[in-house]
Length: 325
Ligand SMILES: Cc1cc2nc3c(=O)[nH]c(=O)nc-3n(C[C@H](O)[C@H](O)[C@H](O)COP(=O)(O)OP(=O)(O)OC[C@H]3O[C@@H](n4cnc5c(N)ncnc54)[C@H](O)[C@@H]3O)c2cc1C
Image (cartoon, rainbow, N blue to C red):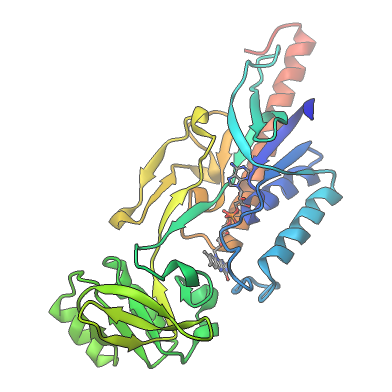
């Protein structure tokens, strides 16, 4: 299918950020299409937690409801993956245009773009770890901390931020082991851990061992010792999902402490690229579902305001018989 009409906005990515952006645009009577590959970051999780009014809802159910709400106001949700998005020739009145090509050959034209493609988690390279991601391997005390309270938890250090993570998980269990994985752990931190009953396992972690029931049985250290654990907390590095979007030229920057990268953005998700906004984890890796949705809503409202100004400029130019610059 080749779509010939031009949407006021195309939203790339239909997670919390993209769907909430589209909702604001659709409710403002903007023609909007959301292109979504259906792979939100929290897909491995059983439920979304910490989201007021929706605590415990399965991710798929939240996004199903969001799609329904967008469609209810005339927004179009397209299942598909964007292969290429970039600027197109401007409209005769000078207004911006973008083309969005999907991997299946379909293509859309847009006046404005909202990029809400999220971020990809990269786990440290420990054999067996990735098998449990999103269930017994967790990263966020607010997302799944309550669910693993009182369990024997291990924190796999990836850098200085892991000390902070350990103190947050100590709030949830008395049985916590900090695996240094040969990272530096100063005496002051060791003293602070000891004061809270956090045990420290020095040396490399060579493998995460799966038990008979399919969950984690423990962590194998380089000296062969098996430290029994049921849950592991680990920091991931986060990388913005920009496959196919290179032609947009969105600027990115490193996150501190080797924690990944993000798309640089300003107020309401504006970017240095005229006509392109970003929202959610693609620009704010710390944003949970609520914050991502809020950022998407703000960007959607800002896009609508931008379009209202452009529509008015065009109307004034038409009346005066002059092209808009
Ligand atoms: C295991 C896990 C559990 C979590 N649990 C919670 C929790 O309990 N509570 C909470 O608040 N937060 C939780 N989070 C964080 C939450 O996942 C993020 O805050 C949220 O997903 C960010 O929303 P987003 O819209 O920015 O991105 P995403 O939800 O990742 O959505 C991005 C969407 O863009 C699509 N996309 C990407 N590239 C393209 C492309 N080229 N073309 C088309 N579509 C594309 C993807 O398929 C995806 O559907 C969890 C995270 C993880 C990893």
